[in-house]
Length: 328
Image (cartoon, rainbow, N blue to C red; front, side):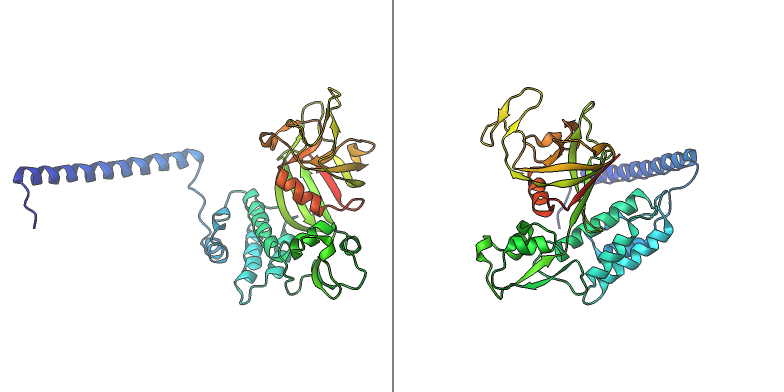
């Protein structure tokens, strides 16, 4: 056993007493301050919905923190329905399609911002399983299997299902369209994909038919060149890879290999159908050389995306079919 000089031992005991006393006083002061704060606010903090917390943690521990508490603007009916929907994921085997469809049905309802965010996060994670994989889950009407016939082309198969052939290549691991062989069985997606752009939050929500897939951050038009609201459609033959572009303000023409080429690697031209979009030309969804412009109003009216997101959108939106709705 170690032996300490008596003076040192006594000093340590006094120091520990002082530390404990200081900690106790600090906790007491903290309690008083917090209590005073909520008293001035007009009440105690909102109680935690223990059932919602337990369900969220068990079903999805990585994202449970997104929906842990009973928030001031929360809809209690929606909270109950959320828990019912995610309960499908606890089943053995999990019923992911049932959970997806139930959660998607809740999105149009009036609810708290935290509840809507939680639902979108769950749907986004589920999309990796049912959409962006080579699996077709039981009961899924949005995806299926297709047996390739002699003479079939990926472009033809994609057109029949209203999706670009590029996404079929991606989910089926097909490196080149020519590798498609007769009697192959591939996964198909029943399109079309659609998008909704919200100017107030600089977000683009992607849907397959009417089912939410995921959200993306975007950049939009600056003051005086705002992105026109209304309904657009992807222009026929309007999807291009790194096209030559002329700046309408300066007249300077940019090629894809120019070091200051501004468009990123994809251009998805839009054609106005309704609202302020009618008759407008020159607008598109495209990438950007400056990621700092995402989430800001700095474009000439186009919808800018991170380059990787623009490539994905290029692979999902069908010319002449996929619609893009721009909302305030």
